[in-house]
Image (tube, rainbow, N blue to C red; front, side):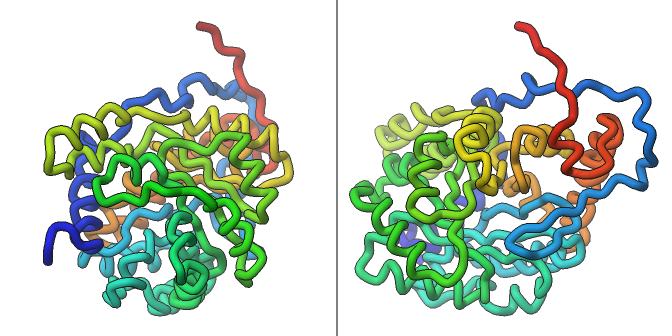
Length: 345
């Protein structure tokens, strides 16, 4: 398969993302500035802590989303199957990677109703690039993405920086918001808008919600830098230099979360972008996230087995439960009003 095909590009992406030294943003993620006031007298049992929540009308065992990460590599089928099995077992949401490759090239890479059969009781989220809506069959592509998975919602990912530094990227974004608004009116499932690691500002989030988007995934800096990924796969030194200048471009997830929550107090928010552990997940929920997403950090486990994915999330959920316990929070509603320390410097 030629290097410039969509499938090969996604395979390159996967190889690079699996090496955190090549793909991780070194930008400040904002979590260190958020510190809980420790509760030395919680007056509850750790086993009493309830991590349950609901999303898209479905009950979840924890406020977690397996974030979009794979979208066309041949390895994606087993990755997606492991993730779907784990999501069902844990009762957490799952978003797939971009379905553009599977829809355009006819290679499903596991992005079929087989995922729904593996995860029948949890939110399953389809995924398409927002800029693809500008294509002649953009609305049809979006509907096919949803139908192909029997998905509960469609993620539209916003990645203008990645497209700008990618030699074969889509650089004309004129009219994307209008197409999003038209899609929200047509599509029978909710639309989720997601950045891919540079963050969504409050002003952009408000425009998206006005257009009909129901959920915002702020996806700020601190995790995978897609500018760095494109720089790593660049064949020309000039292309690499252009991309690498933007390796730390973007807004920290914590900052995005705070500003978007203030601007849109009634909108469901997802925090993703470098969430490293359950303590950071607790901080994200305290700042206004309804769900917390992880992608690259769970990818090595997903390559291995379903059991490895379960073990990964078991650690994160234990950390999150202890964070609730040590703030005296018996559930997520209580965690959302847990006391924070004043920070200095």
